[in-house]
Length: 408
Image 1 (cartoon, rainbow, N blue to C red):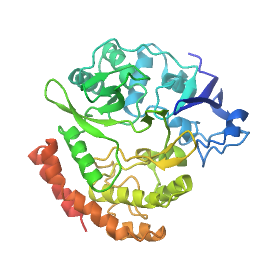
Image 2 (cartoon, rainbow, N blue to C red; image 1 turned 90 degrees about the vertical axis):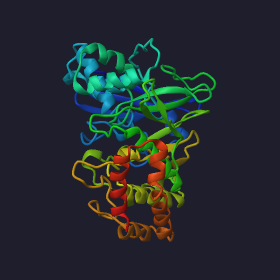
Image 3 (cartoon, helix red, strand yellow; image 1 turned 30 degrees about the vertical axis):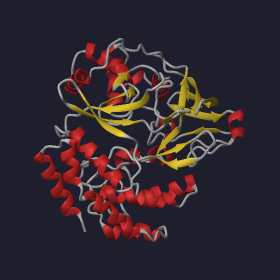
């Protein structure tokens, strides 16, 4: 397979379609240049690492294999990459011959956010009715290693999805409780949603846990996209959430903190202070300090240690206005070394009120104690939220003991 040498990057944002520039591969090197017409618009899609100038850029090999973070954010990670790699292998394509531009052509216009890549590799959409239990069984087969038929069935569902946990992107009609797949432009009454499936290391009631965390987080004043528990015919529950970078007007541009700051989220050196600084520089709104401190406090006390830099994002509309994106992937979780992936004022092992207040003081935030107290009050609702969500008694007790122990 000969890798793609050039692709065009476009921005399909809130109904407008704008050509951004070109990515060109020369061996292992990848270059990018904005079109003059896009520079004239003044839309900054990547403030810190790809300034809006008429020049040729080349990204470093690390951390995104020669891509700039803003484009790397479009690529599937974890589950999606697993499906893409197995799909290519099933077609007899050696993965060593696949370059980063090839991977972007698989994304085409199906990635998160508003960036689109041409030429896109057309993927045949599945002609089947969505059955969550059936998809869950197929997911389990993929994670255990299976034949190519199952891979080919699942590939269109998750081949362009981000994140490590298995998931599918669907259209959902809340009035009729009907799911559809394969439409970028949804029929009237449908919204874009993501539905997650359990991974091999998850709790049996992982969906119920994440839904209970969603309820606690919103009670704590954290903005999140609407979420719910979907139920298969077997009675098994699946966590789903409405996509916040899809609106009635169309797509919003989305960039993760990892892509924005070129942070390797697997070996991150990010601190919540870095996130607060970047947030203010993007949004020009001091309220972002409160939003990020509140989220940091929740992750600290709710024992969400998988708080890495791909789990924080920013959104830009067609006018170039940025906001801190709604929180996502909030759940009870550990990390590989038992540390928070993002440190709090330099502390990642056992951060607490002292570290959170140090952050607040650094950014002249006077509401530090108030925000922390509000988060802790919301976390005291764990047992009620867990019971309402259907979390098992055993898991409820285990998580409550951890939350209670971490309160200071």
